[in-house]
Every structure is written in C-alpha cells, then in structure tokens.
Length: 185
Image 1 (tube, rainbow, N blue to C red):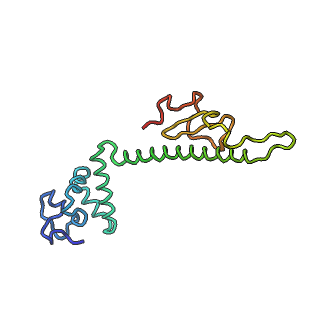
Image 2: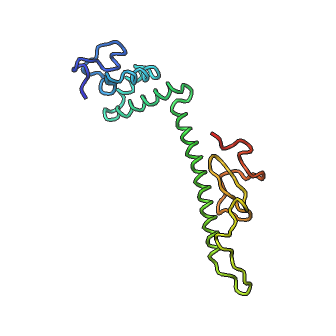
C-alpha cells in the first residue's frame, strides 16, 4: 500500500505525532487518516517508538496482523486498564464453562428420559403379572426426584438412578444449589 502522503493527507500516526508523512512511512499502510483513534490508543499503550521497532523487525506480510493485534490489545486496555483483553478472555471462558455445565445437565436429562422410556417398553415379567404403568399415568419427574438448579440449567435427579459419569456440579444434600447463592451471574 502506498504512503498516504501521495494523496496529500498524512497517515493517522504522522498526524498525531505532528510530523511530515514521508513516502516510506512505516505507519501509513496500517494507520489510515480515517482512523485516528486506532493510532492514538496504540501510541498511548505501547508508544510510537516501540511500535516502530516492532514493525521494522517483522517481515512485511506479518505487519498487518501485528498492528491489528496491537490495536485490539490497546483498545481492550483502554476499556479495562487492569486486565485488558485477558478480562474479555476470562469472561468468555466462564461462559463456555457455564454452557458446558448446562449441556451436561441436558444430556443427563436425555439419558434419564431414554432409560425411562426403555423400561416402559419392556414386556411384563413372565409369571409375575407385573406390567409397567402406561406413559400417561407415570408421575412427573418433580413428583419423584430432587430438583437441582445451577446457573440457569435445571434437571430432576431420580433417586437411585446413577449417572454414567460424575456430574460437573457439587452434590448437595439440601437439594437446591441456589440456596447458597451460586450459579448467578
């Protein structure tokens, strides 16, 4: 990309630094005059001389990615001076963890439902005359299970029904996890 000095307008970096934008300006391809805040953030966080050194050490095809990374980190650091983009990553990791727990709970519900459907489809035991109750007359899970709620996901734990894996939530004997205030955002 050619220097913006040929169009008469200096790049955002040269304009911010109040210097003449020369044809070989290393900032011109990455900090166009239409985006002055991009360079202002990068300059405030990293400094113009550090960015110049970094760009000069990189191969030309790597520079655009480096500038985009610097701009992203600088903007995140401006919004959150303590954590920067690490804070955003942490929030996303917590969200993934919470959604994984909801998915595990939904899978557990599905397994329990499939197992209960299989048990009602079995024929009567020969010689006993015991026939499973019809599906319409079976009790609802709330009537024979314990409700566990965690972070927006809820399921009914059937007493005596082992899960095929250890659940990702703590087992509480009181029943509802919300009693301790957990699971809220």
